[in-house]
View 1: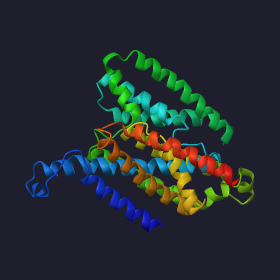
View 2: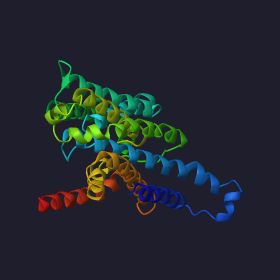
View 3: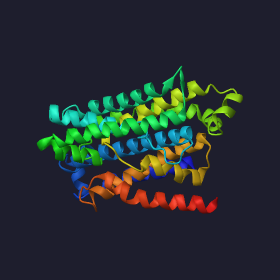
View 4: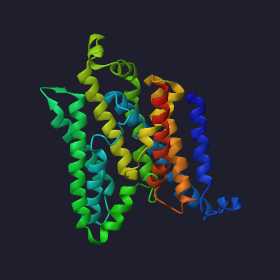
Length: 310
């Protein structure tokens, strides 16, 4: 199945790189302009960025749904989305949009660190406390973001576009940053067995010899880093990290050793296809709108299917 998904991801990248609103005559690719400029300078980095962001969001979704044992958990649960949005909005207002990526990244990491710090007591982290703290911090940062947008003036439109998520300005720099998702996911894969045990319950995991505090800390830090990379590249794109793990559990089962890489590839495929749809049929509609349009009904379908099977 991993090989099949890898092949589908490769085919999606090739197909979506060739597809776009601007037709490219094949013979013009050897002329240097404009065919290869559109293909290699605009579309390919955009498609690769979408694949890496989709893979990252799916990986974080798998980890957090397993850690919280909550099917509603998504990569933005730790306040990373609100923190990243606030960081990007600050960069847009103060610096005219320059350095929005590092500002968004810093906002994500800052929000996740705040949630982690508030939730930690005597060196331990309770999952329920972490979940509630994440919701509270997200709401607080959301309120600060609303006030910032209210006073943004002419920058409001730019902030609004960033919040909807998209790859309009994707470049090779975004690809290089997005590649950080791959090595960051390696520790998650190596901890697959421990995640499987933790999904049985924290007390059972302790009985079976798992250092649950170290495991939770490792999973939270890594998933927050991956989410921060994804958000800093493309803004807040919903449903990829939420529905992809559910889809792949139906196919591969709950074991993280297969579920994690399968979800990453499936997340990459979904976001690459969604972005292609957004820039062709959707006339450059924000890709977050496309993922929400398809993701929300599909998530409801999955919930109904799960309830009927119980």
